[in-house]
Length: 254
Length: 254
DNA sequence: CGGCCAGTTGAGTTCCTTCAACACTAGTGG
DNA sequence: CCACTAGTGTTGAAGGAACTCAACTGGCCG
Image (cartoon, rainbow over all chains, first blue to last red; front, side, top):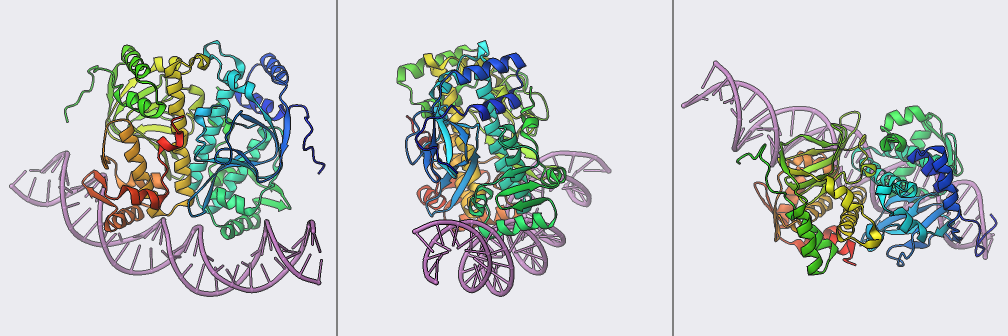
């Protein structure tokens, strides 16, 4: 892959726009205007190498960041080294919009793969704008916040009341949906660029058991994996088995 | 207990005010004014019996609710009946401020004990007020939202990477702190008005194992339980053992 | 080639669950 | 007044889910 290290490329707003479009259900005209105003912000993109702190314990957050490409994670490290990943950070996510809502001293956000991010200071003020006037971007930012909370609820339910088998399938469905909403993947297949250790720390399982569980899903013909490419062979069955509620349903497009 | 069913008592804003005072760190004058403006809202309190839906699947949310007394829970029920409690709802909490941030079709909020709540429509508009003017109440509401997210992070870490023993101790510490922040308890002791089944569904454990784990904590002299009264005998040791990070620390009082 | 990392497999152990039974309390109706 | 029931807490025993330890494979890169 050709590195785009220092160069300032055009702002990677497309994943964010796609997500807003999918979740906030604006009329076409409004969406068009919103996309233009996003482009007009002139956000500067930069690339971040893997395993780098983006926010939290490893460095003060500063401006909020818009993710354009790559995978990151919010994680918490316990005193004895155990790690729990609270959730993945994917294209279209905005981290640290509200300084009051980021528990900096607790959870750090790190890059897992190489990422493209943009300092998104303008989103902070616009995103928190007066809601009574119902500025579309403000509404959109609140919808994104709702999606983030829904993801945490998913994560709690997975960890608390699902078996290893269900957890893996549920997580795959969630990743597929999030990547599709952001427009970086489509169909029943997606690239999973993280190790099984990362998956294990997300799912609250050991590496070994994560591995065995994935194999079981393959043997059962529910998923198919080639390299980093994951294909959901029977997405409907998988959703039924794992009690998966799509984000689109949870947020209700109301 | 004498029921206060239909009567409209004075608004139970004290727990909310206490929490804001503790978490948002306003100067005394500002805090005084904020407390007065809260009182001036004229919120009407009503009581809710146990095991009643407050918001979510069992009934449209409508206005946001300010909790004055009693315990509730946000919960998710899986298709086969398994239940996961996402978090407790305690005095001083406000639920459903932002309609976009409440995944209604997913998680329901129910009362566990009798509760006193107030329809808090005014908090919605005031809480989402223009932040550039930094209205104290708006800042406070965002601090509360931050606290809620921090609690979910706690919950994820407990469920994903802690043993049963650690989970119980960690939860007790969290409940103690939340009740103290709201001013409804103080010291190292608090009333726990819920069954072990509720605790089990919160901790992602079976009832039996929850029971045995609590007993182990008692035998180890870390907690002491009499009826519904829980006393943290060795809060410091417990915090060390369970890697407990107080909310006050997480939110940084910045 | 040699070393490192991710993935895989086997074996034994621990943690937690399930099933079942029993004690205790409170509320209920005969 | 007392049997009856239901809900909660508690305990024992057995099984299963997930973990740990360990070894081995294959790819990738210096």
